[in-house]
Length: 241
Ligand SMILES: O=C1O[C@H](COP(=O)(O)O)[C@@H](O)[C@H](O)[C@H]1O
Image (tube, rainbow, N blue to C red):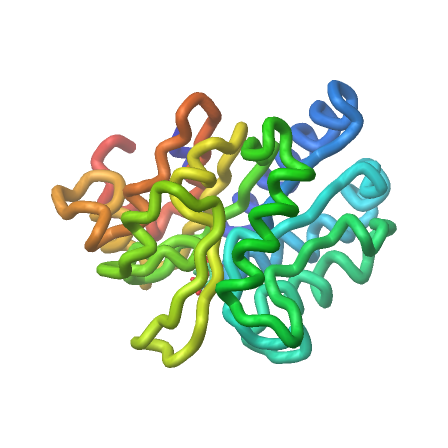
């Protein structure tokens, strides 16, 4: 489902409403809500919005279990840490038990070891060991999502839920949910806006390039919903509007 908004403010309001509805529905039905957060710049305003009076106390955060879609292998104090950003913008402002938050980073272990541990955490906490209630995703200017980067072997991984690898182009380790696991989610929300991503969005949604070139093309949930939340500017090449 592709939804276009005149402004990024309207887009974030709409996503915050949807987030609240999905959380409340899931908590009413099964007493918990499992989410994977995204990093980068795209979710910043959404996270802040969720801490405002309009949303903060309308979600029972004590029933929310927070994971990440991907992470740069850096300590949470680093300004490159996706988890660190989410703590600052959202998690430190809400009443959520600390043992329900699972950053994708741990001091003293290798990224590969922690990918295996994270997989066990997912087995334990997700419905059926694999179904997130909601995964938030961003998309880079190169069409990557989570840490599924163009041309990387991680794009072909089928037998793991979480993978870690050294991303040469950025000279750092990345850890990420794999595409098969992401596609088991009940709901996926992509947040994509701004002029710099016009071409990537067009290529992913309407272009002929394959997923090795535009990894976001891998995201196609088996039976869940995928919402592409875009602003007018980024969608300017998309013909279906
Ligand atoms: O490296 C990453 O980039 C993507 C996109 O970031 P954005 O700044 O363009 O929103 C992000 O979704 C991912 O979590 C992050 O690790």
